[in-house]
Length: 335
Ligand code: MG
Image (cartoon, rainbow, N blue to C red; front, side):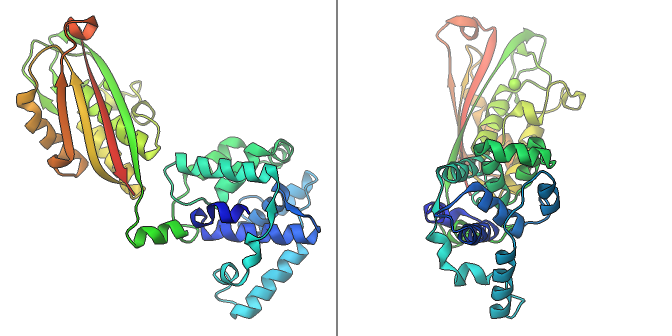
């Protein structure tokens, strides 16, 4: 069953939505749990996401009465106040139902989408996203009921691990099991005479420097992208668009500080960063210690967690002719 596949990853509310979905399927004497049943479960669990009234207006009447009866039953057994935590313990039947192929696909989409956002748990809103993507007929009705893709997307983006109750994944984390993730970053800047060469937040004496909207720090930019990539948070252009005057001539270390805040919000910790700077000249090795210090300070980590390497391009191509400088980085996060 669906819950058995990823049960440890679902938030408490998502697990309850599955429980309600099974009840809805039982009510219809359906051998399978389908996306409509799960939608009934989602609405039961999170009535504020989309109301039954709006759904009814577009002809989607979800099973209800039995759900309410079960809710009352649970309520009476738990004395009312602990109703939210009781069903997960008291109702094991939610792992025995059989999901329809579409629901299985919806659950897989929900899992992937939640992961792509850097979450550890899968919430109710991700399940709704999964249904939206997997079931075209249901999507049309949801759209007519006013649930647009962008609204749903913004709800998914504001999801925070733990806000719907802790998943088992979070309990695992508490007992010391953490997951690790990697991200890759690359950047290149043209070099022009009369510009300062800033790399890793440090000014390196040279006759040329990078053209760019900010200070053109290719190393800092590659590291930014590696960190954002590992966190599933897009790329540097999304967060600091070069069309925004706010970022003109700004120190790229500020980007790193902002990225660090984004990682903090997701409870992600930087384990290690490795980077290569590719430039024909000047010699960079003597400056690496200062660069590691500056980068580490902005990221709130120790310089030992940053490794820097330098390469030339053997005189080949634009980099080899000294017309450009490039950097590659890989970041490892834990969380
Ligand atoms: Mg750049």
